[in-house]
Length: 307
Image (cartoon, rainbow, N blue to C red):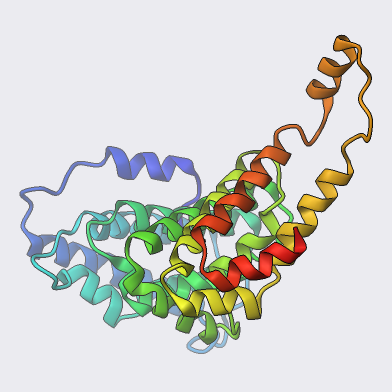
């Protein structure tokens, strides 16, 4: 779908749709989707016995990408009146377009670049859309499918973009807890009896650098939710290893510190500059303290014995 960061620039530089007839936008959107469907069905083994997995000509893949880019721009720019869905969003939901696009990606070789395309696409949708897209399961479900497919990845680029998106999702949840239950139910649909976006963040708790800090910030958004929502607190305590993982990492970092420091000032300054945990230890202790402050009592109770 979105082959590179240049796609974001295209959308950001595109002419605003303000003043354009909504009916015209809808017609253009449907026409683009009709062209996409032709290509998708051509390579769907269920509808074309000659279709082969991963065998998609570059010109057709590029055509789908271009059509989808324009469709996403139309969706992002659509502004609905009151609480009603705009006609484009309603069409996206009724036609299950987002899931069909994700399945199209799976029919291609689902490489790290393809994952990055999808992660960028959803990052733009959730941060730039004028409508609350995450309130709609046909949008949320394929997003969760994508996140699940990125779990356990070892590619730094995918991990970085994944954590950015997870951070943004947690921020949205903190501002709009009304969609929390939908996140839980959609996780279960993917065969995960858990709060998927929370579980995906846990492996990054002790990561150094920007990725680790963004993951810890995202987890704190969830901790603040747990203070008001017993379902979240119960899940963290009963269904995740968050508390022991947080404490174990802190213990490991603490034990890596020297038991004795030389008095020479030069040696001490050198140690501070070279210590791999110099920035991480304060960050993690801060995360622990903020977790205790922000979270529900069961989470605080479970965390304390480990630390």
